[in-house]
Image 1: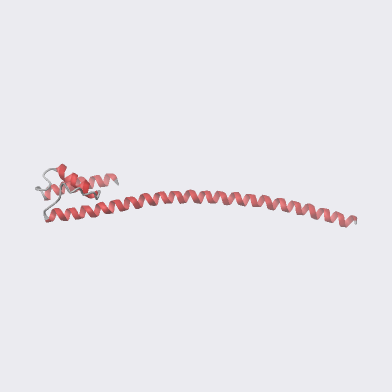
Image 2 (image 1 turned 30 degrees about the horizontal axis):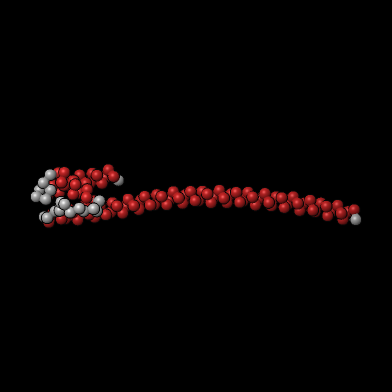
Length: 127
């Protein structure tokens, strides 16, 4: 994404230099304005005054805001998905451990009941 935004900054800086030589006399000025506008900082040191320069500025602003929104949403989504996967794995491990513990307790209860039944049966036979 950074490469795409850098390429877009160079391209729009070049187009700004072609469209408005008075406000963007050098390619460096055009690229600087494009970077500042794409980043939604907008220092105001270089500003387009022609209609086409302002149209280009509007397009660059929309792309900058869109880029920042998509970047923030993508990073947030990635972080949340990673955290959710970790939590799901931990919950699954805890479920398996609880299931094993429950199985062990039930096995112990069954063995005790079997022993009790055997004693009761031996008591009823001898009594």
